[in-house]
Image (cartoon, rainbow, N blue to C red; front, side, top):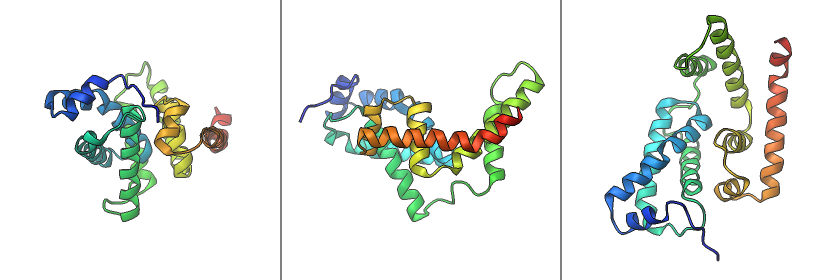
Length: 193
């Protein structure tokens, strides 16, 4: 089997030998991507924080077994998605989306932290984000996951196949279907504008 030469190869090797500083640098380099991925997947800040911490705890524990078969980021995303799915199946944490109101409030909090030129533009951005977020949550998990990975996290098709253990054709067809379903869910809203 051909091994992947990760850009963090030296840090990974040092971490595997027990170098705590190198492990810290790996976490620092990937923390935002893992956090963003999980937030887009589950939409809950508190759950995202818990799952991101669990992802890195599990990754650091298992790093000595990492075999360079995929980029480290893809490997971390695989751990994150497995933790997310386990959490949902066992219902260890409350339902990630308790109501549409909670999601709408979360969307407003995110949008309100961005700078906006006019009150009208801010209101329009909040409305668009809320509709997009609501539509994303209506997608089946597999479609939501692939669209987040490709369009929001900008993973390559190869990375997505490694994370999800899908064939390339499956990734492309599900991404096409996800975009189509998302466009249909948003069509009424966008036609009003």
